[in-house]
Picture 1 (spheres, one colour):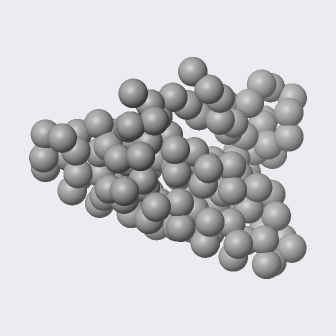
Picture 2 (picture 1 turned 60 degrees about the vertical axis):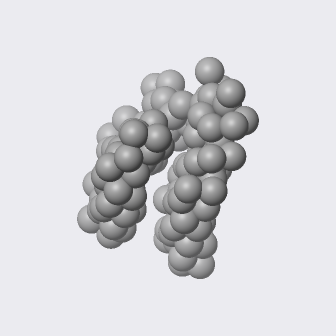
Length: 127
């Protein structure tokens, strides 16, 4: 079932989400200063391509990107670019939820919109 949902997700707009996250990661990686955010963007890009059967959770305390440093990185992320990823996921999510079949996919976009606001200090785990 996960494979079917992931394939439908990818065809119905997951590829757009993947490209947006990859573009963010590449643009951040070009600037040496943006490397902490690019790693988070690449991590979430993989999740945004195949989200079913996985979830995003916070890293344990003490790991890189957690605590006050991670909070500061997330504030800067939000101000410089997280809002446009969140807005794109909201638009795609609302559009998909207009149909009954698109509701689970729209909910995934809403989850990704929330993650887009503060991706530093997050990790993807299988469920």
